[in-house]
Length: 418
Ligand SMILES: Cc1ncc(COP(=O)(O)O)c(C=O)c1O
Image (cartoon, rainbow, N blue to C red; front, side, top):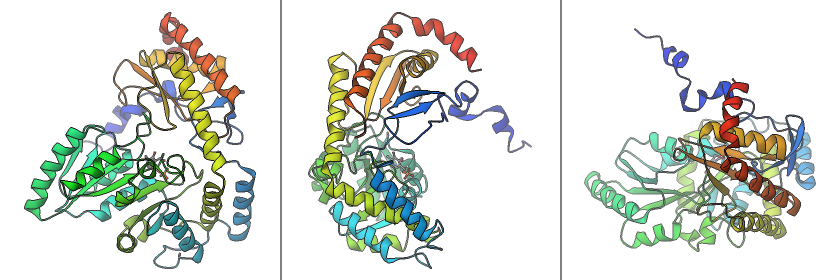
Protein backbone atom coordinates (compact mmCIF):
# COMPACT_ATOMS: atom_id res chain seq x y z
CA UNK A 1 0.00 0.00 0.00
CA UNK A 2 1.12 3.51 -0.80
CA UNK A 3 1.99 6.10 1.81
CA UNK A 4 -0.39 9.04 1.52
CA UNK A 5 2.57 11.38 1.15
CA UNK A 6 4.16 9.46 -1.78
CA UNK A 7 2.52 11.74 -4.34
CA UNK A 8 3.70 14.79 -2.43
CA UNK A 9 7.31 13.59 -2.39
CA UNK A 10 7.14 12.85 -6.13
CA UNK A 11 5.04 15.65 -7.51
CA UNK A 12 4.81 19.16 -6.11
CA UNK A 13 1.81 20.06 -8.28
CA UNK A 14 1.49 22.29 -11.38
CA UNK A 15 2.82 25.40 -9.63
CA UNK A 16 4.90 23.80 -6.89
CA UNK A 17 7.18 22.16 -9.45
CA UNK A 18 8.55 25.62 -10.27
CA UNK A 19 9.38 26.39 -6.65
CA UNK A 20 13.11 25.83 -6.88
CA UNK A 21 13.53 28.36 -9.69
CA UNK A 22 10.69 30.70 -8.86
CA UNK A 23 10.16 31.00 -5.12
CA UNK A 24 10.98 34.32 -3.53
CA UNK A 25 11.15 36.01 -6.91
CA UNK A 26 8.38 35.05 -9.31
CA UNK A 27 6.18 33.52 -6.63
CA UNK A 28 6.07 34.53 -2.98
CA UNK A 29 8.05 37.71 -3.73
CA UNK A 30 8.42 40.05 -0.78
CA UNK A 31 7.40 43.62 -1.58
CA UNK A 32 8.69 45.99 1.06
CA UNK A 33 7.51 49.24 2.57
CA UNK A 34 4.06 50.84 2.73
CA UNK A 35 1.57 49.80 0.06
CA UNK A 36 2.04 52.39 -2.68
CA UNK A 37 2.69 52.97 -6.36
CA UNK A 38 6.39 52.45 -5.64
CA UNK A 39 7.65 49.85 -3.19
CA UNK A 40 10.88 48.05 -2.41
CA UNK A 41 11.87 44.74 -3.98
CA UNK A 42 15.26 43.04 -3.61
CA UNK A 43 16.89 46.24 -2.47
CA UNK A 44 15.58 48.58 -5.17
CA UNK A 45 12.54 50.73 -5.80
CA UNK A 46 9.98 49.31 -8.22
CA UNK A 47 6.75 50.68 -9.67
CA UNK A 48 4.15 48.25 -8.35
CA UNK A 49 1.54 47.08 -10.85
CA UNK A 50 0.42 43.99 -9.01
CA UNK A 51 -1.50 45.28 -6.00
CA UNK A 52 -5.31 45.39 -6.22
CA UNK A 53 -5.51 48.59 -4.22
CA UNK A 54 -7.61 50.15 -6.99
CA UNK A 55 -8.70 53.31 -5.19
CA UNK A 56 -5.50 53.81 -3.23
CA UNK A 57 -7.19 53.29 0.14
CA UNK A 58 -4.69 50.80 1.57
CA UNK A 59 -2.37 53.45 2.87
CA UNK A 60 -4.63 56.49 2.78
CA UNK A 61 -3.95 58.57 5.93
CA UNK A 62 -7.66 58.78 6.86
CA UNK A 63 -8.06 55.03 6.50
CA UNK A 64 -4.91 54.33 8.50
CA UNK A 65 -6.17 56.62 11.26
CA UNK A 66 -9.55 54.87 11.50
CA UNK A 67 -7.92 51.42 11.35
CA UNK A 68 -5.53 52.35 14.17
CA UNK A 69 -8.31 53.79 16.32
CA UNK A 70 -10.50 50.71 15.75
CA UNK A 71 -7.59 48.48 16.77
CA UNK A 72 -7.14 50.57 19.92
CA UNK A 73 -10.87 50.53 20.71
CA UNK A 74 -11.61 46.88 20.04
CA UNK A 75 -8.35 44.92 19.72
CA UNK A 76 -8.40 42.02 17.30
CA UNK A 77 -10.59 39.63 19.29
CA UNK A 78 -13.86 41.53 19.38
CA UNK A 79 -16.51 40.19 18.98
CA UNK A 80 -15.97 36.61 20.07
CA UNK A 81 -17.98 33.78 18.52
CA UNK A 82 -19.97 33.28 15.35
CA UNK A 83 -22.56 35.88 14.35
CA UNK A 84 -25.40 33.53 15.30
CA UNK A 85 -24.06 32.82 18.76
CA UNK A 86 -22.23 35.75 20.34
CA UNK A 87 -20.49 37.63 17.54
CA UNK A 88 -23.26 39.93 16.35
CA UNK A 89 -23.13 43.74 16.80
CA UNK A 90 -24.88 46.92 15.71
CA UNK A 91 -21.88 47.88 13.61
CA UNK A 92 -21.97 44.60 11.68
CA UNK A 93 -25.61 45.35 10.93
CA UNK A 94 -24.86 48.95 10.01
CA UNK A 95 -22.16 47.89 7.57
CA UNK A 96 -24.53 45.37 5.98
CA UNK A 97 -27.22 48.02 5.56
CA UNK A 98 -24.78 50.50 4.05
CA UNK A 99 -23.32 47.91 1.68
CA UNK A 100 -26.81 46.85 0.55
CA UNK A 101 -27.72 50.46 -0.15
CA UNK A 102 -24.46 51.05 -2.00
CA UNK A 103 -25.04 48.15 -4.39
CA UNK A 104 -28.79 48.78 -4.70
CA UNK A 105 -30.01 45.64 -3.03
CA UNK A 106 -32.50 45.15 -0.22
CA UNK A 107 -30.10 43.45 2.15
CA UNK A 108 -26.53 42.26 2.59
CA UNK A 109 -24.63 39.82 4.78
CA UNK A 110 -20.97 39.93 5.79
CA UNK A 111 -18.49 37.18 4.97
CA UNK A 112 -15.16 36.73 6.73
CA UNK A 113 -13.27 36.01 3.52
CA UNK A 114 -14.33 36.29 -0.07
CA UNK A 115 -13.04 32.87 -1.03
CA UNK A 116 -14.83 30.82 1.62
CA UNK A 117 -17.86 33.09 1.54
CA UNK A 118 -18.31 32.67 -2.19
CA UNK A 119 -17.97 28.87 -1.93
CA UNK A 120 -20.36 28.76 0.96
CA UNK A 121 -22.96 30.94 -0.76
CA UNK A 122 -23.00 28.66 -3.79
CA UNK A 123 -23.28 25.68 -1.45
CA UNK A 124 -26.21 27.25 0.40
CA UNK A 125 -28.07 28.29 -2.74
CA UNK A 126 -28.29 24.86 -4.36
CA UNK A 127 -29.52 21.44 -3.38
CA UNK A 128 -28.87 18.18 -5.21
CA UNK A 129 -31.78 18.59 -7.62
CA UNK A 130 -30.56 21.95 -8.83
CA UNK A 131 -28.23 22.54 -11.78
CA UNK A 132 -25.33 25.00 -11.92
CA UNK A 133 -24.23 26.62 -15.19
CA UNK A 134 -20.99 28.59 -14.90
CA UNK A 135 -18.21 30.23 -16.92
CA UNK A 136 -15.23 27.98 -17.55
CA UNK A 137 -12.85 30.82 -16.61
CA UNK A 138 -14.49 31.32 -13.20
CA UNK A 139 -12.31 32.12 -10.18
CA UNK A 140 -11.14 29.18 -8.05
CA UNK A 141 -13.60 30.08 -5.26
CA UNK A 142 -16.51 29.58 -7.68
CA UNK A 143 -15.06 26.31 -8.94
CA UNK A 144 -14.64 25.10 -5.36
CA UNK A 145 -18.18 26.20 -4.52
CA UNK A 146 -19.44 24.21 -7.48
CA UNK A 147 -17.39 21.22 -6.27
CA UNK A 148 -19.50 21.18 -3.11
CA UNK A 149 -22.64 20.79 -5.20
CA UNK A 150 -24.03 17.27 -5.29
CA UNK A 151 -26.14 17.73 -8.39
CA UNK A 152 -25.36 18.42 -12.05
CA UNK A 153 -23.18 21.27 -13.21
CA UNK A 154 -22.15 22.50 -16.67
CA UNK A 155 -19.44 24.91 -17.70
CA UNK A 156 -19.96 27.21 -20.64
CA UNK A 157 -17.21 28.56 -22.90
CA UNK A 158 -15.89 31.82 -21.52
CA UNK A 159 -18.41 34.62 -22.13
CA UNK A 160 -19.82 32.67 -25.08
CA UNK A 161 -23.54 33.27 -25.45
CA UNK A 162 -24.15 30.33 -27.73
CA UNK A 163 -22.50 28.05 -25.19
CA UNK A 164 -24.43 29.65 -22.31
CA UNK A 165 -27.69 29.02 -24.12
CA UNK A 166 -26.77 25.45 -25.06
CA UNK A 167 -25.97 24.69 -21.44
CA UNK A 168 -29.10 26.41 -20.21
CA UNK A 169 -31.09 24.11 -22.48
CA UNK A 170 -29.33 21.05 -21.04
CA UNK A 171 -29.80 22.39 -17.51
CA UNK A 172 -33.49 23.11 -18.12
CA UNK A 173 -34.06 19.56 -19.30
CA UNK A 174 -32.37 18.08 -16.24
CA UNK A 175 -33.94 20.48 -13.75
CA UNK A 176 -37.41 19.73 -15.09
CA UNK A 177 -36.72 16.04 -14.54
CA UNK A 178 -35.31 16.46 -11.02
CA UNK A 179 -37.74 19.19 -10.02
CA UNK A 180 -34.85 21.55 -9.23
CA UNK A 181 -33.88 25.05 -10.35
CA UNK A 182 -30.91 26.57 -12.18
CA UNK A 183 -28.12 28.80 -10.86
CA UNK A 184 -26.00 30.67 -13.44
CA UNK A 185 -22.67 32.01 -12.18
CA UNK A 186 -20.49 34.65 -13.83
CA UNK A 187 -17.88 37.09 -12.68
CA UNK A 188 -18.54 40.79 -13.04
CA UNK A 189 -14.95 41.21 -14.23
CA UNK A 190 -12.67 38.30 -15.07
CA UNK A 191 -9.52 39.06 -13.14
CA UNK A 192 -6.90 37.67 -15.54
CA UNK A 193 -7.97 39.20 -18.84
CA UNK A 194 -10.14 42.02 -17.56
CA UNK A 195 -13.24 41.26 -19.62
CA UNK A 196 -16.59 41.96 -18.01
CA UNK A 197 -18.98 39.05 -17.73
CA UNK A 198 -21.76 39.30 -20.33
CA UNK A 199 -24.27 40.16 -17.62
CA UNK A 200 -26.64 42.12 -19.83
CA UNK A 201 -26.88 39.29 -22.33
CA UNK A 202 -27.19 36.63 -19.61
CA UNK A 203 -29.97 38.59 -17.95
CA UNK A 204 -31.80 38.84 -21.30
CA UNK A 205 -31.89 35.03 -21.38
CA UNK A 206 -34.14 35.13 -18.33
CA UNK A 207 -36.97 35.80 -20.79
CA UNK A 208 -36.45 32.34 -22.27
CA UNK A 209 -35.09 30.31 -19.37
CA UNK A 210 -35.88 30.11 -15.70
CA UNK A 211 -32.69 30.67 -13.68
CA UNK A 212 -31.15 32.77 -10.94
CA UNK A 213 -27.92 34.71 -11.47
CA UNK A 214 -25.00 34.87 -9.03
CA UNK A 215 -22.24 37.38 -9.84
CA UNK A 216 -18.78 37.50 -8.25
CA UNK A 217 -17.87 41.16 -8.74
CA UNK A 218 -14.55 41.20 -6.88
CA UNK A 219 -12.89 43.47 -9.44
CA UNK A 220 -15.98 45.46 -10.46
CA UNK A 221 -17.08 46.64 -7.02
CA UNK A 222 -15.78 50.18 -6.47
CA UNK A 223 -14.29 50.47 -9.95
CA UNK A 224 -17.22 50.13 -12.38
CA UNK A 225 -20.59 51.84 -12.70
CA UNK A 226 -21.52 55.45 -12.14
CA UNK A 227 -21.49 55.14 -8.35
CA UNK A 228 -18.96 52.31 -8.16
CA UNK A 229 -21.65 49.68 -7.52
CA UNK A 230 -19.92 47.42 -10.03
CA UNK A 231 -20.34 45.58 -13.30
CA UNK A 232 -24.13 45.23 -12.87
CA UNK A 233 -24.49 48.99 -12.55
CA UNK A 234 -22.11 49.55 -15.47
CA UNK A 235 -24.23 47.29 -17.68
CA UNK A 236 -27.55 48.58 -16.35
CA UNK A 237 -28.67 45.21 -14.95
CA UNK A 238 -27.86 45.40 -11.24
CA UNK A 239 -31.50 44.74 -10.34
CA UNK A 240 -31.43 41.51 -12.37
CA UNK A 241 -28.48 40.05 -10.46
CA UNK A 242 -30.13 37.78 -7.93
CA UNK A 243 -27.13 37.34 -5.65
CA UNK A 244 -24.33 39.89 -5.80
CA UNK A 245 -20.95 39.10 -4.23
CA UNK A 246 -17.91 41.33 -3.68
CA UNK A 247 -14.78 41.16 -1.56
CA UNK A 248 -13.16 43.89 0.54
CA UNK A 249 -9.77 42.67 -0.73
CA UNK A 250 -9.59 44.97 -3.75
CA UNK A 251 -11.25 48.41 -3.92
CA UNK A 252 -11.81 48.47 -0.16
CA UNK A 253 -8.20 47.41 0.50
CA UNK A 254 -9.01 45.23 3.48
CA UNK A 255 -10.17 41.72 4.40
CA UNK A 256 -13.74 40.46 4.39
CA UNK A 257 -16.53 40.31 1.82
CA UNK A 258 -20.31 40.44 1.45
CA UNK A 259 -23.27 39.15 -0.47
CA UNK A 260 -26.29 41.27 -1.33
CA UNK A 261 -29.73 40.24 -2.54
CA UNK A 262 -33.46 40.51 -1.75
CA UNK A 263 -34.20 40.53 1.98
CA UNK A 264 -35.76 37.08 1.91
CA UNK A 265 -32.74 35.55 0.22
CA UNK A 266 -30.34 37.14 2.71
CA UNK A 267 -32.57 36.02 5.59
CA UNK A 268 -32.26 32.48 4.25
CA UNK A 269 -28.52 32.70 3.65
CA UNK A 270 -27.73 34.01 7.10
CA UNK A 271 -29.22 30.83 8.57
CA UNK A 272 -27.60 28.53 6.01
CA UNK A 273 -24.15 29.88 5.19
CA UNK A 274 -21.92 27.31 6.81
CA UNK A 275 -18.78 29.47 6.45
CA UNK A 276 -20.40 32.09 8.68
CA UNK A 277 -22.50 29.91 10.99
CA UNK A 278 -19.50 27.89 12.09
CA UNK A 279 -16.79 30.55 12.09
CA UNK A 280 -15.92 33.52 14.24
CA UNK A 281 -17.52 36.80 13.24
CA UNK A 282 -15.63 39.38 11.14
CA UNK A 283 -13.42 41.34 13.58
CA UNK A 284 -14.67 44.77 14.60
CA UNK A 285 -11.48 46.45 13.35
CA UNK A 286 -12.36 45.24 9.87
CA UNK A 287 -16.01 46.26 10.22
CA UNK A 288 -15.13 49.77 11.36
CA UNK A 289 -12.45 49.99 8.67
CA UNK A 290 -14.91 48.89 5.99
CA UNK A 291 -17.47 51.50 7.12
CA UNK A 292 -14.81 54.20 6.67
CA UNK A 293 -13.72 52.89 3.28
CA UNK A 294 -17.29 52.62 2.05
CA UNK A 295 -17.91 56.18 3.14
CA UNK A 296 -14.91 57.24 1.07
CA UNK A 297 -16.24 55.36 -1.96
CA UNK A 298 -19.51 57.27 -1.60
CA UNK A 299 -18.13 60.70 -0.86
CA UNK A 300 -14.86 60.81 -2.81
CA UNK A 301 -15.71 60.06 -6.45
CA UNK A 302 -12.39 61.68 -7.34
CA UNK A 303 -10.67 58.43 -6.29
CA UNK A 304 -12.46 56.46 -8.99
CA UNK A 305 -11.95 59.29 -11.49
CA UNK A 306 -8.22 59.26 -10.84
CA UNK A 307 -8.14 55.48 -11.14
CA UNK A 308 -9.80 55.66 -14.56
CA UNK A 309 -7.55 58.52 -15.70
CA UNK A 310 -4.64 56.17 -15.00
CA UNK A 311 -6.34 53.14 -16.55
CA UNK A 312 -7.07 55.08 -19.72
CA UNK A 313 -3.57 56.56 -19.94
CA UNK A 314 -1.95 53.15 -19.43
CA UNK A 315 -4.24 51.21 -21.76
CA UNK A 316 -4.26 53.78 -24.55
CA UNK A 317 -0.47 54.23 -24.21
CA UNK A 318 0.07 50.49 -24.57
CA UNK A 319 -2.27 50.28 -27.56
CA UNK A 320 -0.65 53.30 -29.24
CA UNK A 321 2.69 51.52 -28.96
CA UNK A 322 1.27 48.45 -30.64
CA UNK A 323 0.91 46.19 -27.61
CA UNK A 324 -1.78 43.54 -27.54
CA UNK A 325 -3.91 44.17 -24.45
CA UNK A 326 -6.63 41.76 -25.50
CA UNK A 327 -10.25 42.62 -24.85
CA UNK A 328 -10.15 44.15 -21.38
CA UNK A 329 -13.19 46.20 -20.35
CA UNK A 330 -11.98 47.05 -16.86
CA UNK A 331 -8.96 48.32 -14.93
CA UNK A 332 -7.24 44.95 -15.25
CA UNK A 333 -4.64 45.48 -17.97
CA UNK A 334 -3.14 42.39 -19.58
CA UNK A 335 -0.23 42.65 -22.01
CA UNK A 336 0.23 39.60 -24.23
CA UNK A 337 3.67 38.75 -25.59
CA UNK A 338 4.97 35.64 -27.34
CA UNK A 339 7.58 33.49 -25.65
CA UNK A 340 8.40 30.44 -23.61
CA UNK A 341 8.24 30.17 -19.82
CA UNK A 342 12.05 30.54 -19.38
CA UNK A 343 11.97 33.59 -21.69
CA UNK A 344 9.12 35.01 -19.60
CA UNK A 345 11.22 34.57 -16.47
CA UNK A 346 14.24 36.31 -17.99
CA UNK A 347 12.01 39.13 -19.24
CA UNK A 348 10.34 39.69 -15.88
CA UNK A 349 13.72 39.64 -14.13
CA UNK A 350 14.98 42.28 -16.57
CA UNK A 351 11.84 44.39 -15.99
CA UNK A 352 12.31 44.26 -12.24
CA UNK A 353 16.10 44.57 -11.99
CA UNK A 354 16.87 46.96 -14.81
CA UNK A 355 13.69 48.94 -15.36
CA UNK A 356 12.17 48.95 -11.87
CA UNK A 357 8.80 47.60 -13.00
CA UNK A 358 7.03 45.01 -10.86
CA UNK A 359 4.07 43.25 -12.44
CA UNK A 360 2.59 39.78 -12.26
CA UNK A 361 3.39 37.22 -14.88
CA UNK A 362 0.97 34.55 -16.07
CA UNK A 363 2.03 31.63 -18.26
CA UNK A 364 0.84 28.20 -19.41
CA UNK A 365 -1.32 26.40 -18.17
CA UNK A 366 -3.37 29.48 -17.17
CA UNK A 367 -3.02 30.83 -20.74
CA UNK A 368 -2.11 28.94 -23.96
CA UNK A 369 1.46 27.65 -24.44
CA UNK A 370 3.83 30.14 -26.06
CA UNK A 371 2.06 33.20 -24.66
CA UNK A 372 3.27 35.42 -21.84
CA UNK A 373 0.74 37.56 -20.01
CA UNK A 374 2.04 40.48 -18.02
CA UNK A 375 -0.81 41.71 -15.84
CA UNK A 376 -0.90 45.34 -14.74
CA UNK A 377 -3.28 46.67 -12.10
CA UNK A 378 -3.45 50.48 -12.27
CA UNK A 379 -4.52 52.27 -9.10
CA UNK A 380 -5.49 55.81 -8.12
CA UNK A 381 -2.03 56.24 -6.56
CA UNK A 382 -0.08 55.80 -9.79
CA UNK A 383 1.29 58.93 -11.42
CA UNK A 384 1.68 59.89 -15.09
CA UNK A 385 5.42 59.50 -14.58
CA UNK A 386 4.90 55.90 -13.41
CA UNK A 387 2.91 55.27 -16.57
CA UNK A 388 5.43 56.91 -18.92
CA UNK A 389 8.33 54.99 -17.35
CA UNK A 390 6.37 51.77 -17.65
CA UNK A 391 5.47 52.34 -21.30
CA UNK A 392 9.13 53.06 -22.13
CA UNK A 393 10.21 49.95 -20.24
CA UNK A 394 7.70 47.82 -22.13
CA UNK A 395 9.01 49.16 -25.44
CA UNK A 396 12.53 48.25 -24.41
CA UNK A 397 11.75 44.73 -23.23
CA UNK A 398 9.70 43.98 -26.36
CA UNK A 399 12.70 44.91 -28.51
CA UNK A 400 14.91 42.65 -26.40
CA UNK A 401 12.37 39.83 -26.57
CA UNK A 402 12.09 40.11 -30.35
CA UNK A 403 15.85 40.14 -30.82
CA UNK A 404 16.28 36.91 -28.86
CA UNK A 405 18.00 38.40 -25.78
CA UNK A 406 15.75 36.53 -23.36
CA UNK A 407 16.12 33.28 -25.26
CA UNK A 408 19.87 33.51 -24.69
CA UNK A 409 19.50 34.68 -21.11
CA UNK A 410 16.82 32.18 -20.17
CA UNK A 411 19.17 29.24 -19.75
CA UNK A 412 21.28 31.32 -17.39
CA UNK A 413 18.21 32.54 -15.48
CA UNK A 414 16.93 29.02 -14.90
CA UNK A 415 20.38 28.07 -13.64
CA UNK A 416 20.73 31.12 -11.41
CA UNK A 417 17.43 30.34 -9.69
CA UNK A 418 18.03 26.60 -9.44
C1 LIG B 1 -12.89 37.02 -8.55
C2 LIG B 1 -12.51 36.80 -7.11
N1 LIG B 1 -13.39 36.23 -6.28
C3 LIG B 1 -13.09 36.00 -5.00
C4 LIG B 1 -11.86 36.32 -4.46
C5 LIG B 1 -11.55 35.96 -3.04
O1 LIG B 1 -11.69 37.03 -2.19
P1 LIG B 1 -10.87 37.12 -0.80
O2 LIG B 1 -9.49 37.55 -1.14
O3 LIG B 1 -11.65 38.11 -0.01
O4 LIG B 1 -10.89 35.75 -0.16
C6 LIG B 1 -10.91 36.92 -5.28
C7 LIG B 1 -9.58 37.32 -4.76
O5 LIG B 1 -9.41 38.13 -3.89
C8 LIG B 1 -11.23 37.17 -6.65
O6 LIG B 1 -10.36 37.74 -7.48
